[in-house]
Length: 322
Image 1 (cartoon, rainbow, N blue to C red):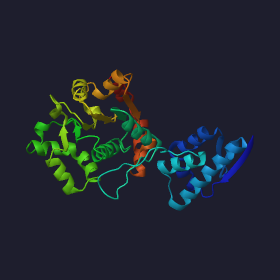
Image 2 (image 1 turned 30 degrees about the horizontal axis):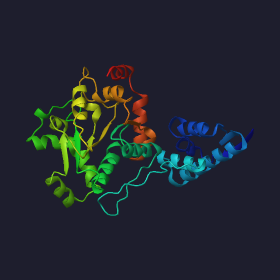
Image 3 (image 1 turned 180 degrees about the vertical axis):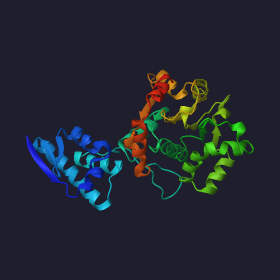
Image 4 (image 1 turned 90 degrees about the vertical axis):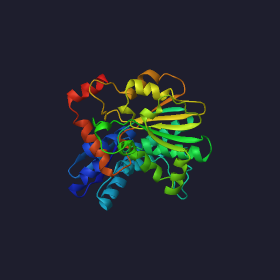
């Protein structure tokens, strides 16, 4: 066993370099099987020679990044760690072929790469993860790619009209005005991949449909790429209704965040129920994204973690019953 040291220099570098609750140090310990301690302005790494060398290189690169930028986000850390380990977080996963010229969309984390592989290899994919982890965005990109390559004839984007306990009946405006806020995130993703005039034309031709979940009842969706977003806010009966719309040549993605259920307290989430019932069925894929897959503003990872840590016991028990 050998030991190496990395001088920390300014004390204020410690927090961004170590990560929230020393999460960077924990991951380095696990990745290289080394002991990492901080004492007297130095980071000390102990273990076998090769592991110490790699762990020290990670710390040196993190330190350099903090000195230049003042912070290290989750993507930076994962990229550096994987580079030193000699692995690619997104190896074997190509970027999406979408309609807008010059726009390249590809997975940015290992979890997102697994998600994209799951979508491409299965007809029914469940994606569970926190806000900002790319659940909706990557699903829409996959749908647009499938449409361009003529693997499907249409795209259907669906959302339950349930948000924070509000009822559509109490909202102002006609039906279109009432449901538009619920569907806005899906429109936003589409607008990044298809220009406005083209999207308008495709929607007029019913090639792209964005609709509330209630509009799915009684339909059979053949040769369609169907995405159910915010699926944690479906009831068990709604989820059953939606999944049984699947027709020949269809591909379905069901995405949601099971920590953000807005259903009444006595209602069980259709997403958690479906995961329990269907996970053993061949051809059904379940992908779990984590905080490490969040690719929004660097603060989003820490915000999600803060809420996870401070979740009250009573709320946790309530969610466990769903």
